[in-house]
Length: 304
Length: 104
Image 1: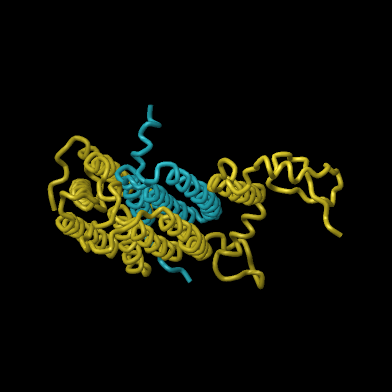
Image 2: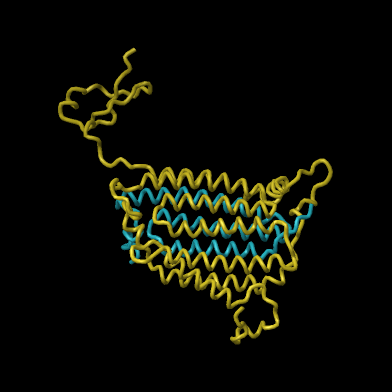
């Protein structure tokens, strides 16, 4: 392992036994940044080198975390956590690096399933089910439909990997700046989490709030507790959530509606139509309006 | 049944990584649909953080918050995709740079 206490910044916390050395975090973030930079869709750079770099960085990180997690405090859910989080991060990277939007959406489904698995590891089984139903079932279906609605025509004969894609899909915008900013942020976040998080290291092992119920009323898991919590403490917010859903549904319909501009040619009135249908105007509520005249008050009588 | 809970920091790290990846995608991608997909990716990171803290502190406020985040995400997705369809009809492209003149 590389020497750590080289800077003043790190020397202040010198006596702390780090879970991950800060310099390793820095190196991993640089490797991840360069790898993501090479993976982002572009015609010039090679995605294979970036993928290799990212895989090496992920392997090193995995080994370090694995060693730390199976040291003094061993956990039974450990292997599942590593599998789910690896799938989630892999899917997330493919979401932002795949040039075709449909595949981005499908990889996002993969990420959603993996984080639902993480939720189950944290005793939040209702949230996992809701996540899969709402995200993978509803939101992503909407995304795929919109992608198909807004797709541009493809040329069938071309078999190259970037064939038939729009210009905006194969050229990233400011990939270098974005990778620098993003992975600097990631480095700082990981450093803070692993450095300052040691004071938090006494988690609650029991499923949350299972002790509020007792006897026959108690159901295994935390779903019943969430229901009680929602309807006892958050009832106004819960109703407001329903209101927000209704309002956004109406808003989406209004926004995406295809507006009819102008008058259709078939209903364009002519002089002959007006002169031929010059029937007297009636205020009878049973009468039905006649299209094809310029006079809006002109109506036709039912025949019976 | 006391299964050993893995330390909180690992879950926070996964949440942070997902958030940052979504952020990078939000900046770099130019397809409007993928941009909104990246915001959903950032939501995922935040949701993992919320659930982890809910488990850690042993109260249910975090899980209840996840429900509200899902509600907001669903309504945001429907409105945003409606707007994307509207913008696509206007210029016949999904490129966000086609609307560059909105900057000034």
